Length: 233
Image 1 (tube, rainbow, N blue to C red):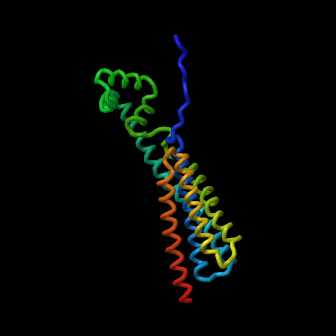
Image 2 (tube, helix red, strand yellow):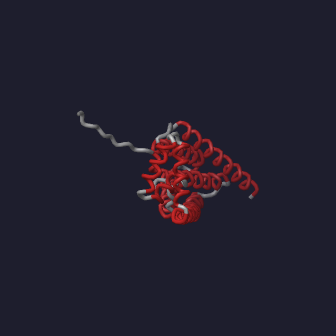
Image 3 (cartoon, rainbow, N blue to C red):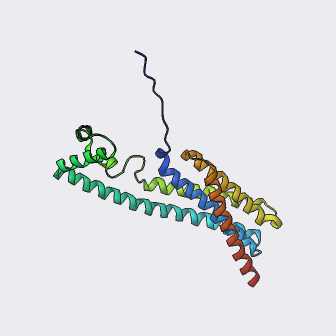
């Protein structure tokens, strides 16, 4: 008998938790900091004011992202815990109904009634709560909410993203600072979109176009506002 060959599969779903937070944090860091700098620069501010604005935006944004992600994902985790507690109670008080429910799930996925019943009975003989969490509630190790991971990932990637346009603002000559920061930010966003798509196993072109479009819109809006208020002052 020929030896069976095994292969390792890597699926993007295993990275969905931290990948979403990382892309969101880095994208927000680049867009918000670059927009702040461009908006203040359009009002004819000095370099010191620009850098101070960008640094303040970096610190405030990183803390805001961490707090926002933690609160948001904690709410998801609370909902998951409540659903699991309810499911645990139902398994303890109405096991036969839960067995029928699991059977119906597998019938809906294409198994015959007899085979679905056998699968359900096998699953109920093992970690029944994990089986119902996965198949009935859609909760698994890959998708389960992790508030601390999301908060730290968002804060770190926001800081890295914000530091990029801030560094360009510190090095670019003042006469070309606005186009330099704008073009660099769009380039950073395009790279971020491509890397995020690659990490998620998707085609990179649509994410790259999407993030650069919204980034350009944000930069243009803040530049117009800065120019308008600068002219008034």
